[in-house]
Image (cartoon, rainbow, N blue to C red; front, side, top):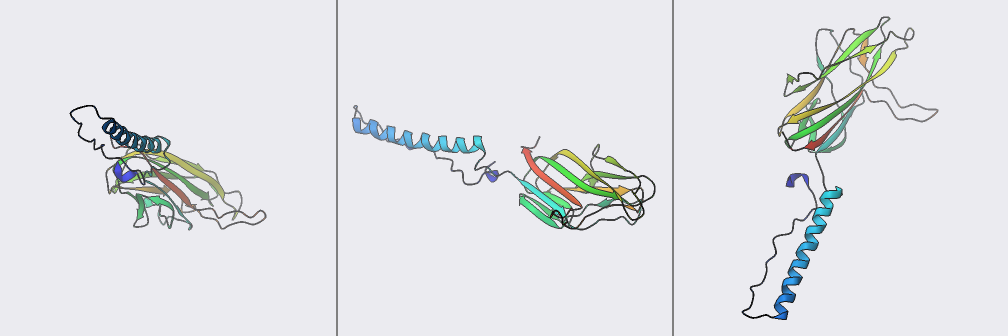
Length: 213
């Protein structure tokens, strides 16, 4: 747990002076001062933990500014990330692997910008892998309506939240598959009138929830 807390000083046990043979006011005053200092420090540390103001738990948010397309409808593709928006104890390795430094239970949330340029409805599925192995019961199928018109795609956001039990150095990948090469994960440039941010093809966030189970 100490690896998850920054700037919190855990006070050492108080070093109380030896008691004299008879009652001595100066001894009692010294003991009171030592205990007062200790409990003040302890109270500050407990307050920091209770309020979370000095607690840093592992977390990371990552996104990708490029479109991701499939070359085959029979292949699963790891979703990639090229931007680290925020990170402590969670990093992207090999462009797709959300890797945790600390063991624990994590919440993984993702939002994928999907589009369909096909003239017929299509599906995109997204699921999770842990250390290269599919995680049971994590798949989701998102239905995409046919394109609005020639060259004008149908858009939809695919999003989900997963709770995962991970060991230190484990990694998780989001993987996708499509029923048509015309259905893809798309990024869009920043807009004007009004001025607005670019649309990443994917945003994923990993947050520490609790100690491992």
